[in-house]
Length: 378
Ligand SMILES: Cc1cc2nc3c(=O)[nH]c(=O)nc-3n(C[C@H](O)[C@H](O)[C@H](O)COP(=O)(O)OP(=O)(O)OC[C@H]3O[C@@H](n4cnc5c(N)ncnc54)[C@H](O)[C@@H]3O)c2cc1C
Image 1 (cartoon, helix red, strand yellow):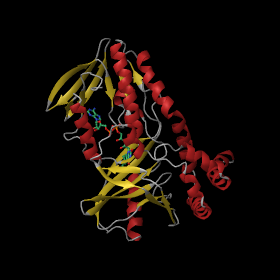
Image 2: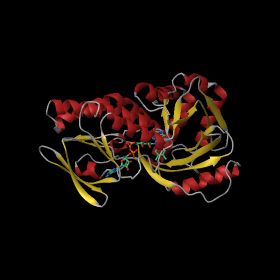
Image 3: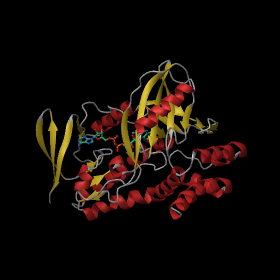
Image 4: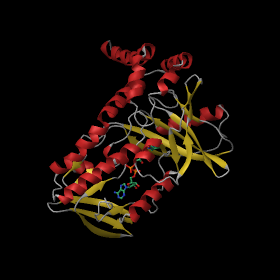
């Protein structure tokens, strides 16, 4: 928005930009090519993954090129705030937006800063508040219908290990857990986390730590970690008079993994163009800002639909189903064929290819049929 020549004020409630961190910081390579993202915060690169089945079987997956970069999310956010300041935006920290009122000529915000209440008047407001939906609900945009609950911790690690993704109902019902090592100076750190769709994420995290200890990958100690959440379905409406929502505030994430940085930033760019046009035309009405939603849905609609359906199929698989999937994937050379369609951010092609393979489709659809049949005969 500042690059469009507008007066911009960024309001961040935390005292320090980028802290606390609720993110692993894995961003696909394409995002760095398409958007001018800061590269100085890149800690490591992702080119190999080991996926671990509930049985413990490991499926190594290698890509011909770097698939994604892993950033220090705190440094990444500070660099983005720096870019905004350089473009002319003012960035206020420790500034909590407490209330928002849309009037005919402006939006009025009440901001708490250093113990004082400040009134801010703006022609337009971008809600980029992460997974918080108070203002969206107030403005009739609703909230996301589905969430992943997450827990993550970051600890030192003495040696290099591969990135591992763990599947299985005991540690991550309907979702996945991760062991994500990054280089730091001469040593390593590892981000350890789980996502769950149902049940307690803290219980899932404890089960995951226990598994890692049994595998000899983690010293026993009392690790505690912060829980957070990720929306995995967009809001039914992401605009109203003078207001748009972007990023997690709009539910613009990948329903498969919950990764939201690239989709959120892509949509933010569209939001900036639409608002700048609206200001030029002196029309920031809901009808004018509807163009934002039309444009971002045009980019993401098919991906979100495919990924969301695939997730629902995956959520119904038992551990035995996942083990059978692995047995097939490991035997068949399928992973090599799938490589062509594998993309860090765009999953639809890989999903369609997977469903073309009869044994895989059988396992994936079998879980859905079983749960449907259980309901029929209940
Ligand atoms: C454990 C975990 C791991 C993840 N890993 C990845 C990953 O590897 N790759 C990926 O792409 N995505 C990942 N995600 C998702 C990713 O973190 C989010 O999609 C992304 O942070 C969304 O960015 P955002 O700017 O929309 O919201 P946020 O990053 O949540 O930023 C919102 C900001 O708004 C501020 N705020 C909120 N309300 C107010 C208010 N009233 N007044 C002032 N300020 C306010 C908050 O303090 C916050 O700083 C992960 C998420 C979690 C929880």
